[in-house]
Amino acid sequence: MVSCEVPYKGMRNEFVMYQVMMKGLRPKIPDDCPQFLRELIERCWHQDRTQRPESKEIVKSVYHEYKQYLTEADGLEWKLKHKIGSKGELCFVASDHLAICGNDSVEVHHVSREETHLLYTLRSDEWGHYVWPCGAAVSESVPDGILVVCQNKSYVYQFPMHESSNHVEKYQIHNGNGNPLCIAANANTAVIGLVGYALMVCNLPGFTQQRIVSISFTPYHLSISTEYLVVMGWDKIVIKALCDVGQDLCSIQPPDSCIFKAVSYRNDARQLYATCHHMGDGKWHVYKYIWHGNGTPSYHNTGCVIEDVGDVPFRGLSVTSDGILAVSNYQGETRIFSLE
Image (tube, rainbow, N blue to C red):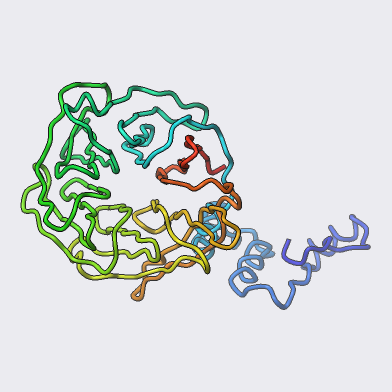
């Protein structure tokens, strides 16, 4: 496999067997073979079989040596599975529940690799007044509930995850720095992106101890983990530590002639997916970046996940930890992709 050649080419099988068993004949390892792999090969064909590594040791050692490359490669092949006839901002509120925030409603769909079906729709008139949903999130501190922010209201709305209901809770939020644009939440903290270059950080449950953190750009999209906050603007994505939201751990710029539109991640911000609009060809692409988590963190573009998603502007993106990607556009559909 390393040499891309037939071993013992031109030699008769019986002669090869004798030379290998009695004389210790082995194929020549190419000079450019990595040292780690050379040593592993030599151990595997050791004349004394008791010195050869077991299969589980081989797998473990190869994965440890090449896990960086394996991780980077696992997101390059996405395949379209099916479509939903809805558009809007997206949020996987569970591994199999997708919330789509449209112009005047929130749809909750059950999503799998095989099929998708609508569970229910919560329309703005059920909330008692006209609202423009623009972001959704879930939190362990609000079991079986979905949190929604709206561009024209200074509240966070909470409604049930599993059924449509006229009973909607709401929490007042400070809007002196502008109305909400997006929301992200974990078990203890909610972060709301505001118009006016600011983030609002709140304690959960109850959205208490609200504090405003100024940033240098408008936050159009947020993703949160237990330790990190990913904030997207048109021309940059930054990752912050939740313990110090005012400090940027790293920042990435979009590819040449592109602007960011949406961002989501897997593996605690180790794998980040972003939709980009390319000004040159007018098309929208999904890119993947890897954060290596070292002392000077940075993201590295590992290639286009979906090479061409068409020339229809994309509105939102969300990805689950087990590799289901949802992308919505302004034409009126959400596409569901799966990592094979």
